[in-house]
Image 1 (cartoon, rainbow, N blue to C red):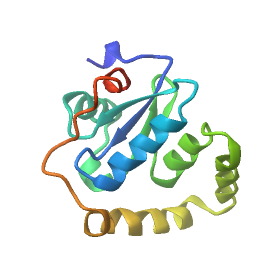
Image 2: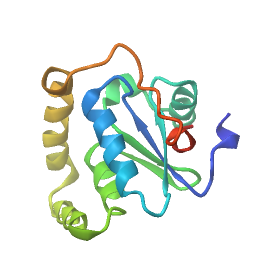
Image 3: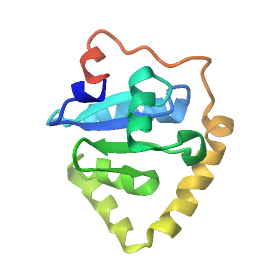
Image 4: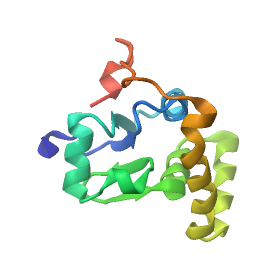
Length: 138
């Protein structure tokens, strides 16, 4: 299953039942003018296969994961910043947050992640993409 992943795309693994995460995926899609990203929920078969391949226990990580096949993977604030780097425009200003140590950035990230269901809600199941967006999902 891992062998079939697109080598020229960056893969975003996200919590498929989290409203904030789903909104973030929609934001990424709307800014992905160069068709860089593909998406899979952490709960999907391919999401689980990627986590196993990378030897990640997402239940302990509680994070978005950016996987660049054959290169590296990133999580938490670093993944978010690397994704936003591709948005262009004023979003590039977010790269200034790299001046803060990753541990400090992740304190903020972890606080939001810990409270995301309480603040933004949770779905009973993963969102099914529209037919127009289906090609973006693995």
